[in-house]
Amino acid sequence: MRLPDYKEARTRDKRSYKRVDFEIDDKVKNKYKGKNFCLKTYGCQMNEHDSENIKALLVYLGFVPVSDYESADLVLLNTCSIRENAHNKAFGMLGRLKHLKSKRRDLLIGLCGCMAQEASVTSEILERYPFVNFVFGTHNIYQLPNILDKAITDNKQQIEVFSREGDLVEGLPVIRTNNYKAYVNIIYGCDKFCTYCIVPYTRGRERSRKKEDILAEVDSLIRDGYKEITLLGQNVNAYGKDLYSDYNLGNLLEDIAQKEILRIRFMTSHPWDFTDHMVEVLGKYSNIMPSVHLPVQSGSNKVLKLMGRRYTRESYLELFNKIKKTVPSVAMSTDIIVGFPGESEDDFLDTLSLVHECKFDNAFTFIFSKREGTPACKLEDNTTDQEKEMRLQRLNEVVNHYFLENNKKLVGKVILVLVEGLSSKKDNMYFGYSDTNKLINFTSSEPVNSGDLVSVKITEAKTWSLDGEIIN
Ligand code: 5AD
Ligand code: SF4
Image (cartoon, rainbow, N blue to C red; front, side):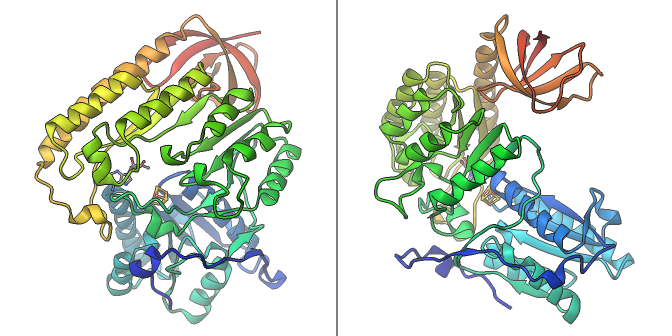
């Protein structure tokens, strides 16, 4: 048994980590043939991509995926800790699984992902959830075959969570959810330690993949017919800092943009690490999509300081405007937290005025959620829950107004859409995404295929999507 420890998870030092190739014993191939599994994924794209690896490992062992957990032999929850409601969802699911297991003693239950990295969660599982067969963390996904095997063979709860990142394992098998859009990890972990955020504890320190490994993965995706890749990391703009003195996200984007790939995206960016060179690169290549997610979190300098964000409202706006000027067609999106401890009405008004200034194309808005072990958890918080709810509502009204305003500007324009599939509404209705990552629903009398790039004339703007018709 190995339990996580936050003190250790916080430590950052110059200790080097090894890059190792994933290996698996042939003997376990199809060992569990005839069994099926249901994998439930909560949280961000990082978790979604981890689930693509987890799925491939389970399929190697002979398991078959099913979507209905009630008929599965194994249910695995890949969890998220970012806010309390993500936590509650996973624990709610564990409650339902407890009930199911009382009827089906042979049901296997596993938990992994960010919640597994929290000491309070693993100790709770140890004490109150004895029916959970195994737990592993974000740093040792590659050990899943062994941990699962041990849980079955020993018939004893297995908890194997590393507090700190171990080796950087390359070559994990992957079964991708989409046949033409792929996620590519470029950097793991985060060293920023924003005071509200649990990620540096659950995902470890920043570790970049070698550029050769990333470029080889992109080449193989291109060979397999992928049209769009999204470079992933908690903070992609820190890419390369731990490995190279002269190679960063800008260089990586340039190397990838020169390949035969239709669309390149990247997320998430921290304003602190966004260099002028990176901005320049965005403007230089037409296959780097004009869509930048740049979380601001607050428009108040006082709150930004309490959050440990390392920038001011003014320096955020300077970067924002630089990107807009260099890439005029860019769609900017953001994340905003309201109700951070100490946020006054005036601070909140600063956030609203920043939104009026930036007119974001998309924004994810949240109420501050206390995460145990983070510095913000200890800050004095005098704002009532009701007031926080009101602020969220007021903020949402303003952000929604600008989503619609920005979308209205596209009515009558012809835009390129990468087709995702048939939308359920009507038989000749399809959906896909624009270069700026807007959801487009469109009609076409001729069938179109997922992965096609088509021209669509926009006929109607809505707050979260646009309607249109295909142009032949
Ligand atoms: N409470 C509320 N929102 C949070 N986020 C991260 N941590 C918290 C928290 N403790 C939000 C931030 C981040 C996004 C992924 O989630 O806005 O950018
Ligand atoms: Fe949730 Fe953050 Fe973990 Fe993603 S990295 S799953 S957002 S806690």
